[in-house]
Figure 1 (cartoon, rainbow, N blue to C red):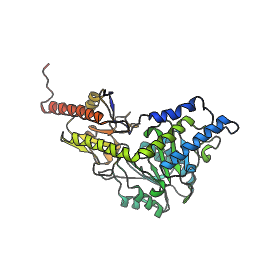
Figure 2: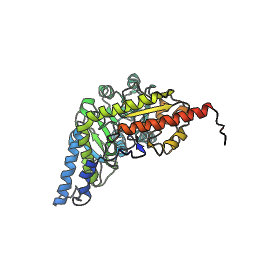
Figure 3: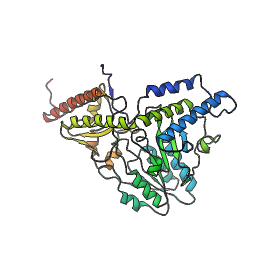
Figure 4: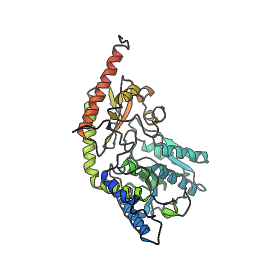
Length: 394
């Protein structure tokens, strides 16, 4: 089989759309173009029905009720709505949030915004394996705390936090618990009831759907979570998020969730086998570290540091063969060393030689072997250059 280059190993940044998802979505751009809020004719009814069906599939994937799903433009907007919406709803009584230093920028920047408005935020550190210390979480709680926000799984390292234990601590203190589950939903089983989650954010483009559509799960009872809308104009989505619904995107999101629900177990097994084989082959190079390798991780992701290489040069040299990334897609525009890896205690120098590889539904063994071959060759060349000095005879 011909190998299409570069091999795509950056599924944590975005996934390719599943052809079945695309097929489901296409009619809603042309024949079925109705507005789901048009209540007086069949075009609107058809669109509304399609949105309802998608809502059911999306809710079902995370163990929620369809009424608890609020559609947004993506996980970043969902995070903003959750945190700002809660803050505005609670600010008279309570103003303290607890989150983690390794959260996605969507959470960190929104928390900074709350601090600018007079709220207070505690940023918990992580251990060297990327996990939080539950005792430190317990100690950070004050009578003023109204929200604990901890991501389900990290976008750079794949580390999965002890969500159930965190939610138990939140419940015991009557504090709401929000998790950014953008990397976890569709990859590992996530259940808002079993996990005790009050608010959860995720996005279609991380699970083989299109970009530009996401969702916020908002618990309806025990407790009923109240949010102040951040976008006004017509009271769509239970008055939480106004705006004409992105029907094609929502239909596609629903289909993507339906497929994930069917494949989650088999796909997880297949991808962790690919990932393990990738790591095992690369470890033969020696002087490489699998970051958080002993912590619970997503099955498809790995974060690897290579000693004695030039990271900048490696990205450049591998570009035509492999698509992978240095840290998260959202911060790769800046050359700042990854704050996630810094928080785990890696030196700046090593962070520059650290890369994220994430496999997906369409990754194959052939692709993995090709990637291993390319990386091994580059690493060996860099190391032999370093050992022989940089003097080359021209």
